[in-house]
Length: 154
Image 1 (cartoon, helix red, strand yellow):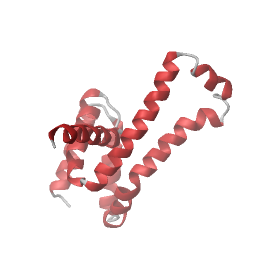
Image 2 (cartoon, helix red, strand yellow; image 1 turned 135 degrees about the vertical axis):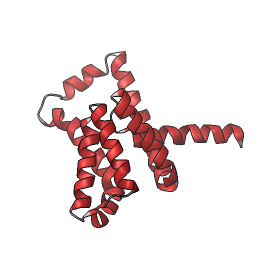
Image 3 (cartoon, rainbow, N blue to C red; image 1 turned 90 degrees about the vertical axis):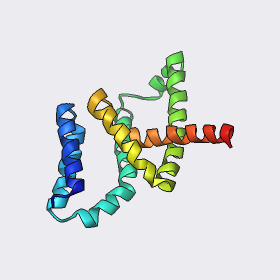
Image 4 (cartoon, one colour; image 1 turned 90 degrees about the horizontal axis):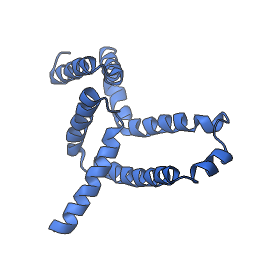
């Protein structure tokens, strides 16, 4: 039971505790729990393959709740595009979605880069109170920068 991955997870838990980041601590609890219940070999591959989609779906549901409960309607939508902040938000949403698409390609085609992305995300989460949606966006930004570098270098 006690191996390199267990030690790594324990360090992440301690960093989450030091950084007062419940998200990291809960994630480690879940992973330890699955390992203790001997469900890791069966569930880890499914979670790894589909976890990003599940996470994006849960975040999307949370974001759409104000629309579903009537708090945001067409009037608020029209009001939002009357300000330059609304247009900035609209453009940012488009940009991030396009960047994230490249991130999915990068994570699928270059999984060895996932380690650096995860470490970068964890550093931001633990020490800078960031939010752990970073691997996908980070991968997308990395993908975009790699393409720009390739354009000028190759």
